[in-house]
Length: 217
Image 1 (cartoon, rainbow, N blue to C red):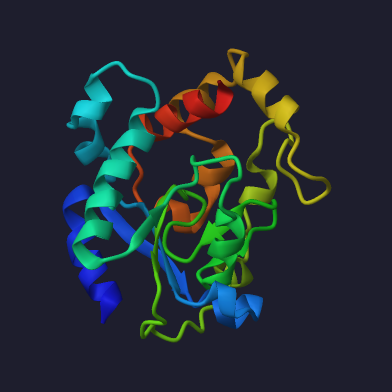
Image 2: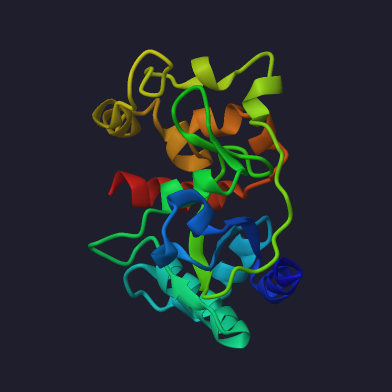
């Protein structure tokens, strides 16, 4: 199966298949024919990236450039087109694509949650095939449905992520400038860390700090 081959090619870089789907079945258009496969950062991605030339060359956007090199190589090996969240405008609808795979869901706080990565989601790119390739049936339910405690709901120190309102980005970024906010800056978003599925995904704190610095700008 194509996903097994992609997993084998992606493994040395620490990337993994986060989901896949046939766009035509969702968008009901012949123009959307083919197969989309989303690749994300797995548990071994951070050490692979930090040992790369992109990480040490001092140039902007090292992770995006590294992702393009890694995924671009995979695309060339299997005859796919590579697509990236950073390319645009116009930007590819990665959030919609993710939710269409049946492996991503909306968490109670509004952030996407993945069946194995939890809230530690880092989609690095996608592979698009012209043909509709065989894909496994996905019948998973949202992990939040079986999460009794739902610690993500109360984990944000300033309530920027809540079930009561949309994500309050200004409140989040303002908090990150305070002494109290340094825990989130250095260890990663407290809400993401609170998710039980995230805790089993074992993200390096340095990786979370890297993403937090990029988010804060």
